[in-house]
Length: 480
Figure 1 (cartoon, rainbow, N blue to C red):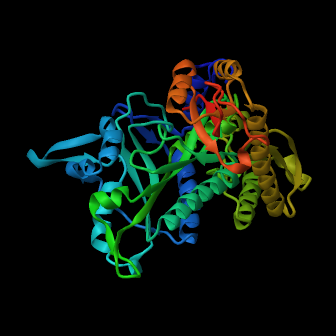
Figure 2: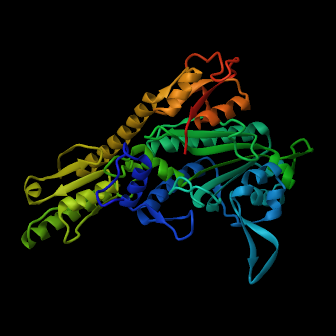
Figure 3: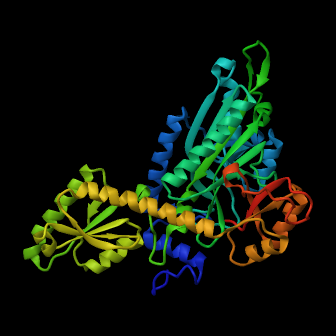
């Protein structure tokens, strides 16, 4: 961030993104190439995300577990497509304890292989199914081009892994967890997403089908916010996870995996931030309100700070995450500037004149300022937070729809992707050659083959690229 402040989004969106992170004190660069240090404010946002999702996972019957960081290299090789997909990204331990290891160990890029090695021990009968597991952990993928939160060599995430007796049960699970992700992103992140199927070239290595939640950022690039995979019996066969069926036969389990990561913090920044700094949806704000007492001289200080403390305690009893900024040597304006940059949804200003009138001045981070009575302040602030949350979602959805175009021709696809960007809907024949040609020409990828509720009212008749009959509708965009 320059001495002049945050770069504007219009001037340089990438520089703006980094400036917001630095000003909000969300993260910083690590001495290890491609890694980041998540600072307390950024980690608290992640904790709030984690807490909300963890409740949702438990409500759907999943249990948390923990699996090792290190995976025998031979485990990856047992699932050919999986190892081919991750081979360029793996970090390998070859020496430990002062000597060379007999078998190298891979630092997990994901945990399917180690989990299925354990499932082979635990699952013997249909009575042992389903297995519904989740773990919160870190993974390492040796990325060539890194960006804070969006793509780092090491990142935090959750990865769910489930095993089922039938293909239909596993497919339903993959779809169910996609729905859980969508609910979280829309209700908590205030981020509208479109859901759908990934093409074979974009799916997870080792999956039969990959489903995704895709959001549109303010620079009109797409962001894959979360994925859910139907793995079929691929990993079960590789690791011999077999069970006795209810009819007495033997079968391999059918499985899923699904995950979201600290990339969501980057999505939150790019979906809602402005040229002042971070704008945090109230449900994920480390502090939902900050009270700034205002005084002139010691004679006023004690009474104002005491009143601000009472207001803080009342709001905390109402369930609001709130604190009082009583730092000395800082003018109120400097405090306003700092908390705005950190995205606190509501600022409450309280001075002697406000106390005399039985009120507090309430400023919304998203704009607007006015007095509120001190009497009954808790419910009013709670309502205001809900209004801010809803308004952020509405604005993001309206922005997405305003930057989505449907039924495009080949020339319109090229012009849109290379110009303003956004989500571009068009007919697709399903041929990987067309998909690759579009990618090479425009750098756009198929974000999803959209679910029914997101498809155009009239199904496209022709492929946008080759003009053959369209089998599907696809959504293209340049993406992070």
